[in-house]
Amino acid sequence: MNSRIIGEQVVRAWAVAKKDIRIYYYKPPVLISGILMPVFLYLAFLMGSKPVPMSFLISGLLGMTLFFTSTAVSPVVFPWEGQAKTLERLVSCPIAPEAIILGDMIASSVFGIAVTVVALIIGLMLGASVLNWVVLICAILLGALCFSAIGILLSVPPTAIPQNIMLLSTLVKFPLIFISGIFMPVDQLPPLGQTLALISPLTYFTDVVRISYTGGGSFPIGFDLGMLLAFTVILIVASVVLHKKTMPLRI
Image (cartoon, rainbow, N blue to C red; front, side):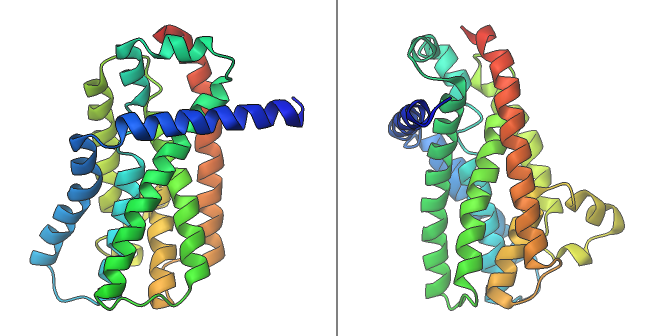
């Protein structure tokens, strides 16, 4: 595939992303599950916990916000498209399956980053200062792609019923937030929790964000970013391979 064809597919992927943002990302359920849910969970945590530094709280809130917003819609875009019979029209266009998946990922990432920036600004207003902006920005960009890829992977089952995918998404997402060092550092989790934390990309995102605020974490910065990158590549490749197999079953 030459550079001209790749460029055309990227433009078409961006068109898919703009379509997703316009149609799907302003729905009330998206705002509730992607924005209000992390806030309510963290408020519940604060009410039952000892006083902790603001930097620790904000780093955990940023982790939950980016995770929930980046995975709020990406799991159900394909089911919605299949239910509305618009996926057939999209597939009939001169656009590669990889470009469709990339467009959905871009939309989820942009939405996740935008909401996380708002949470970041609120944290600054509350006095949570950032020690390393370069690390924080790199973590947010990479984390948005990684979490969007998780959402795309969850939408692989060829169903046109969004509720089925939402149930699967909930079963995957909620356990992750409790084993990923959001409410307490990984090294303070029980042995089983520490082992499970290693297979969660949210663990490494939360840790590197906490380093950017406090200067210390459970893992080195390079290890956190490297694991986030590895998870992102693996999840994207898996999503493309599996969706190319299941997409014909949707139309």
